[in-house]
Length: 387
Image (cartoon, rainbow, N blue to C red; front, side, top):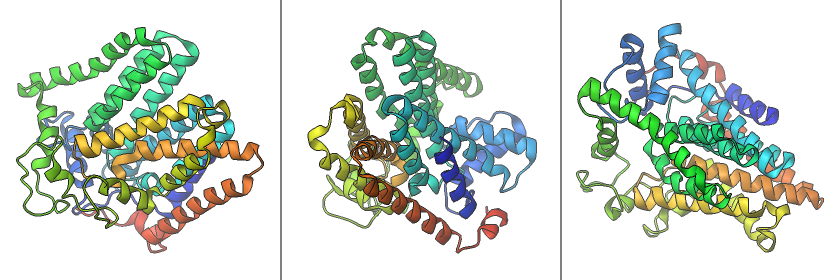
């Protein structure tokens, strides 16, 4: 864990870029947090403001310390370090110390994560709750006590409240309970999962007379004009399984072949998730040993399947804009695959490629970080906020 956290903090020092402002989404989170700081609770009027697991703590920080670039670092940094810690701890308990060392380091330096460590956005906050749910599930396997089941349900629910895209991970969580012989625990998990959602609905019912306000706001996000969609797309349509949306998002890496494969090709080719093609290569290289204990066993195969399902659900089912930042869970699972299979390579004495891959990704992250601030981290850290 210490290595992963140190790597993450090193990249923060190289590029302390947090709040950006202008046309970025973070300005909406800042406005919602300001309202929270001033009034304690504000009925949201857009999908940014309804994401209280991010907005509420940021509002508390603003009320406590005032508004500054450094104050806006606090909540994202806490979420980011928690994400690295939870991921590493879960991998260590599941695949061993060597796998955790590799996976934790790679995740910390993968740009899709490292470039958002201080960013006022919802991506890492959502992933942190999913990582917490995964850790709690792992503890249910080890301890077989109901408290970890309840905590897993609460964490998964908070992930959904942070951003509803986490709903796409629920089938994988349910399957994990069933495959681990804990089918009887799906009910307490479901009750714990439902509790925060019901509480949120009651709050909005009291405050706005609409218990489903947050869900209406989330579903309405596609009606907001964006330059990431080609002109002519009917924004009034629902996004679910909508080829009009799927086929017309601006490709993240500039690759346009066919709507059925564009999202995947652009993700694999994007430098922000360069760990993904490495993981795919390792899976192909070790294909004959997949499923065996030394290659991560069935747990690794399950995670790969979960990543594929999550990707497909977001891209084709929800028709989201398939930018790399939307696929942090996929990037995390790629890091886990690199960790589990990299540990196998270490056991076989193949330390050079493992070390080389880690250093390549780490060097890419460091160079990208320096380039982001034009070699001047001081200016990035202390520049005035832009509205």
